Each structure stands twice: as C-alpha cells, then as structure tokens.
Image 1 (cartoon, helix red, strand yellow):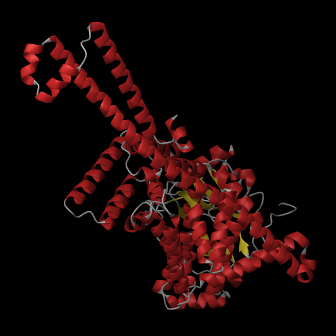
Image 2 (cartoon, helix red, strand yellow):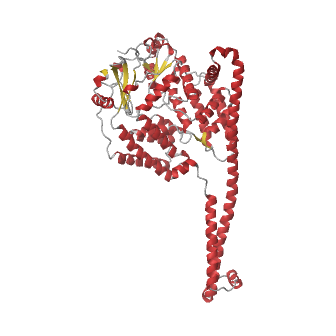
Image 3 (cartoon, helix red, strand yellow):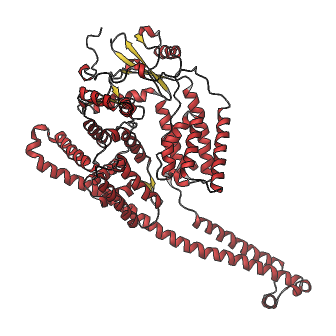
Length: 611
C-alpha cells in the first residue's frame, strides 16, 4: 500500500448507476489479421469505381451533392483504417466542399471490432516488460470500450490499489495506417498533378493527416495532454482523470477509472425512457443547463486562454458527475493553435459577444488562409449581414439549437467566404471540430441557448481572471476600474497593431492586382511583337525564294507580295543567313520574355512542395 495514495476523484462526486454493463450491447471480438498485401490494390479498385460512379452521375444529370456524399461515405467506410480519418478531415472543409457532402462525411464511423483479451494481455506484458500479474491484481477479461485503434479494459493496480482504465493499441494498426497513408499520399500527388481543385491545398491536408496519425499511434502524446489538461482545468469544476506515467508506453496508457455516466448514455436513454433520465438527474443534483454552460465556458477557456483544448468533445468523451460536475476522457485529439491565429480568433469571438459585426467581419477575413485579388468591401458587407442574422436567431428560444449555435455562425461565414474564393485556415477547422462535436451534447442539454449572452459573460469573467492574475485577488475590487481601463487600452493597442499589419497586407494585395494588370498589358504588347517577328520572318523567306526562283514563285504571289519582293534589296547568301539569325534571336528573346511575364510568383508553401 502506498503511503501517499494518488490524488483522484472524490468518491462523493460519483453518481448513482444509470446504465448497467449488462444492458450494453456485447463487444464484437475478432482475431487480429495482418493487413493484406493486396489491400492497396483493392483500395485503388474501390476508388476507381467511386470516381467512375461520380462521373457517370454528373454526365447523366444525377450528380446531387447528397448522393455524392453518400457514395464517398460508403466507400471510405468500406476501406476502413485511415480512410475514415481522411473522410472526417474532409468533412471539416465546408469552405471547399458542398454542405451535403460534408454532412455525410461527418457521419463516418469505423466498424469498431475488438481483439481477444489474451492478445491484449500479451501486448501489455510486452510493453511493460513482465507478467501482467506483477502490475495488476485484476484485469478485465472483456473490454468495456472499443475504439478505431484501441480497446479499453478495466483493471486494478496492485501497487496503487485503485481501479484504472487500460487502453491497449490494436495489433498491426501501425502497419495498416502506414500502408493507407502511403496510398493516400499517392492519391494526393495525383490530384495535385491533375490540378483538381488546387485551392483545396491538398499538401496541407496530407500534412494534417500525418500529424493526426502520428499522435494517435503514440499514446505518450495523449498521456502528456492529460497531464497538461489536468493542471489547466483544476478549479473549473471540470475533472480530468489521473494518468499513471510509470505504466505508460507508446501502445499502452493507464488512467484513472471514472465511476460515472457517459453523456452518450444519457442521450440514448433520454429517447427511450425520459422519465428514468429525469429522475436520475434529480437524484444526483445535475442541472442540464448548468452542465451545458460549464462545458461552453470550459471549451472557450481551453481555446482562448490555455491554448490547449480537447478536440473531440463528443458525448462518448463527456462524463457526468454529481452536482453538475463534468469529467472529460479520451484526449487523443488534444491540440493547440498558433499564437497569432489564436489572437485573431479571440478578437473574432469577442466581436460577436459585443455585437460588433463589422469588426467580426474584418477578423473573418484575417482568419482566411488566402484571399482573392478583389475588393473586400462587398465580402465584408455580406459577412456583416450573415452575422446579424445569426445574432437575431440566438434571441429566439423556440428555434432549434443548431440554428443558434456558434457553429451555425461559422457555417454562414464560410458560405460567404467560399462564394468569393476565400479559403479557411486549418487552425479554424480544428477549433470548429471541437465545437461541432460538443454541439452533439449541447443540443440536448441546452436547446434554448443564447450564445451572444454566454460569450458576453465569458469575456467579462475572462477579464476578471486576467486582472486577478496581474494584481492579486485582494486588490481586484479596489483597482478594478483603473486596471480594466488599462487592459482595454492594451487590447486596443494590440488590435491596432494587428489591423495595421493586415492593412499593409491588404495594400500589398491591391498593389499586386495593379501590377498584375500592368503585367497583362506588357504581355499583350510583347505577344504582338513576337507575332510580328514571325510574320517578318515568313515574308523574308518568301522574298528569298522569289529572288532565287522567280519563274516558279511569281505565279504563286499576289500583286502585293510581288511589289514587296520588287522593293526588297538584292542580298547574297551570307546576308540572308544573318537576317534569319537576327529574326530567330528576336523571336526567342520575345517568347522567353512573354513566358516570364505570364509566370506567377511561387508562394513559399508551393516552393517547398516543388522541392
């Protein structure tokens, strides 16, 4: 027995049981199989069949986005493995793919099949370097949860004398993902070579997939994320289970077992037996609206203050405790955002909270990965209009949650941006994933949400937290007015600096557009000179033939060419050779100049890709 047991969840916060394990459907178990060498060949055949179906539907006028999305989803589900992750990433690109396609891809789910418990024990013993009984005095024979790349067993640590959740990576999953990633890389290079939807920035999507894959296959990333999130969420009435570092490896992670109810169980049971759920919530002093407000406040604190946030807050990863407390589990998708981008996103959300939609529209443009060379005022007007409409919807309690969610505002904004050729940054898409998955719980917990009011409250509290960090809690009340003014001045200076930088870039875009027009004029002029050089060369060749073979050429020439031949000087062979050499030189110089003027500057990411 340890002298100082690990600090874990207070048992008084564990609620009564809502769903008995025997009520859950049994986990499907199958023997693991090494990926076949023919897997890529079958995948290529399926992808070719998918492309043929999509082309045929388009040619025969039956190519609706919804039908295309269904075909994509079914194909990716058949392929399994990393193709599921690929489809889920593509579902975030609401700026580049039709909404119906994104909706279908968002429904992608892997066929989660567990592997035999003896195989799990073998992997644990191999990773921990000894018999499993040396570490655990109990180890569940059947997994209680199965995920796409792992399964989870309930166990009891011998040394710490506490129950834990042991996540074990599936056999051969690293090999499977490596093969899938290699094929996906070839597909991406082929798409880039064909220049299909170049604005999709396929190389960036492939880099994102590589990063996600590397983190999911190494459980040490998740263990690190759990430790950091545990420190940051302390004191927020949000609980993060303890991770036991001494037993963690790349393929095994051991965390505290939380005795509570999953949000997914609450949602599922609310459909079939709402009275039972209502009684359970009352018995455990759980207020759905309070839980929702705490989740919303927490996710914005994670994103905007900690810059470390849970990227997949689906109902299966949210655990309800007594007194409206919440625990989060499965930190595989924990991520962060670049500091400059995060500051822009914070100003965007703050502008929404303050109903400053013109400023919010400016921040939307600053958050884009790329902007077209056109007047942005029209785009800004459309953005302001869409944001005002969203704010109006948030005031109507009777409207469905999805029409009032902050993700609905994002969808409206992206719809405007995509119409004008603006593309989203991956940082924005990662944040959107966290908010979208959280909406699956919030639409049940808090259907009459008012995000404008909640965001206003969040920023008020955020300023107070910031002030307490600067001057300490004892001086907050006496100095709050002066410091709030000072903080407001500092924020305005930061915003001014940021806007000035963006203004410079905007002027650079306008200058680039003007220089592009001048370059187009020069291209037209040089092209005409090139054509003139070709015409002069052709006429010189005709004159040369007329001077050498007058009897044969005169009948073929019209009166105008005949007069031209008569007025041309008589030149000997070497001089004619010099004339044609000069004309050829002029033609080559003009053609190369035209090609250079038409060539666009290579952007840094394109230069790296080319190398």
